[in-house]
Length: 483
Ligand code: SF4
Image (tube, rainbow, N blue to C red; front, side):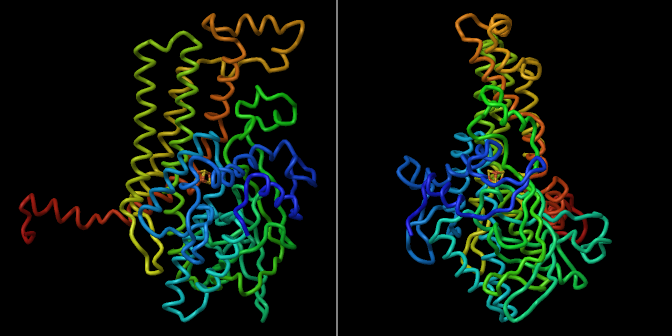
């Protein structure tokens, strides 16, 4: 089967029988609904750029399984060059969408599961890796979008999965038979799941033997019987249903990923799609691999998003007549500095990557976690500087309907004008873009997407090799016994 383009991707979504709810209503047609269209447009770009675009060689590659041309979003990294290309690709596409294009989560899930199942098979004599390879071939051959389904609702964070009052707070196995397993629970914050074909379920935290029913990794279609998606709200999402585009800021591509709560009500999964079943000893490794792969991304996609914020902020300064002020230029320099620091980290963790036992390449986990930790701070600072330069109107401007109103439009036109030569509407459009990209949902995503800050700090401490640093210091200080 050939690579999909944007249209065939959209058509393939129409064929799904998804059970989706949003705003308290069942959504029959996701593809044409204004709530979902921006997210679908973003994901569609991952297909459109893979063929016939100037960036085709970045967005497509060769399958190590079949030798066929595939979309890079389904590829298993075969070198540090592949890891670097990933970061470059994410920055490029984020600069075009100013938003999240969602497809990286499933990609990271495939790579993480690929590496860990190899090690499980080698040590346990299981055949999970072969199953995963067959599944991967199916994904590559049909150019499918896979949602990476890791985060559980977690209930009481002070209790492990097996000790929760409600056993469904983490996805768990409720039945095993000769045909497969049955799972129950939910996955939260599911990026892009509404417009994905498949979901790859993984556990979310390291587990002990008492949690083994929760140690499950498996793949299922997003429209499998028993799967229900409840779409999450975003800042200003109601504007999508009002008509017009100015107030949306980024009408075509929206804000972040379009997340949903996915409920799994006794979902059957055949054995050929099960990649971990009660092997709790490997859960920590799988979580670490997936998290590091996904944290690698953030200096790519967030750098691309920040490129747009810097551009929008500079344009606002120009419209406001403040572009030449030295303090404005200095703040723009700071935004660029923070952005490039994020990018450096993602490139570095890719360059320092190494082959796993499976042959697939893995990033340097210490550097990858450092990148994501920086994102939880730098994106807030970039947004703060953008607000500082852009001015208060990004939060107080009247609506597009007021601008178009025959009676009062002239006042909006007159009093929201900046430098005379620039149309008021351009200034309003740019202000809305800044509002869209630096507001509530976008910021929270930078904080918690790919794991909350404390999760990175735990991994940073684990990887930091403090013992070696102490030995270095003792040696220089002449502490006895150190040579
Ligand atoms: Fe990809 Fe970035 Fe979205 Fe994660 S937040 S899915 S890395 S675009």
